Image (cartoon, rainbow, N blue to C red; front, side, top):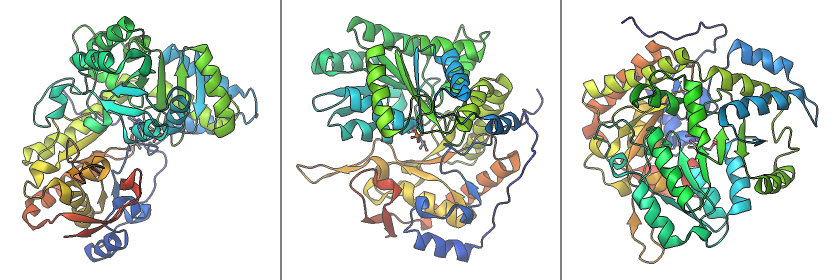
Length: 457
Ligand code: F0G
């Protein structure tokens, strides 16, 4: 088999800035050792997130020029609505400016004190939006998904037995809906199988509960189903996406991921009564229902992106280039979540720095070192993001896993960029005995990882 190449050529380029190690040392200190606080142009290769960082295609840029900016009834909205319906099959399509705006709306309408939302693993904004209403968010990930070193095809699957037990314990009347996140971002970008979606659906049906997908990375999930799940090898990715959504009653979507755009999102659902309430709230918080916080041009770009993201040559390159980085790290002994997920490589900081305990944030230490070593910006997904202090005992409760995410922007970096990333990670791993843990010197009450300040110990 020949090399799987980028299925595009480059029409427009953006320079990246090189800095010296001395400069990066000062930049890190000024940023309070929080990569979120580093100026983007001081970063050489930015793997902070795959969200909103895609390179758009020439057709998407053409759509930007072609966008219809009518306040109401824009033709771009109708193209967007048709593109979303083609994939989701859902009846009511509500545009939002990004994923968390869709979350804010659906949880404001359905949430509140005494309500519970199970998911395979809630993403941080999803959890925050649920908790903001007074409701509670629960992660019911399958056991295998909690073990970074175990290789399995569908480590994003929900624990179906745990779900049924959860519904019985909490009472179905207190559960507005069940959610599945595809792929499971917080658990390593691991896919969910079609069988698992079907099994969750049948539990939902039994208790008359709706099922929602957090669909940010639906196309990457569908491609994993195609290459890993029996019976799907000859189906098109679009058909697989349509089947995934056919078991759902609604979805929240950040178009900043698998719609290949820099801004956008949507809420889609089948229940007319709830959709009407959501649209009314949308008008207060986002905008009129045919633009929802976006410009007409943004809606065009999303519609075009949704067509491009299900192309198999794109997904083959996408999934393969993530695995390529993962394989290089594994070959050099670097512990990662295996097998590599769709949008990112997750370094297992517990095994990378076994002597740094969770309350000294090993993932944060590694993320800082990658910047210092090579100007690479990565993101801690561990106890900085999910650790908490027990309100009653004041004990530190660590996150389930200590990870550093190298998220790969879509269609942005070439193979030599990725080779460089691997070299920097390998260098950092060689020097790991010199790395120290971190202490938090400032934190916000919610979503602290974005703005926290640190001090190396
Ligand atoms: N759900 C999942 C699974 C996500 O990964 C994200 C965003 C959201 C919801 C919220 O979407 O950012 O458009 O408001 N994840 C980004 C990340 C931020 O870096 O993983 P948003």
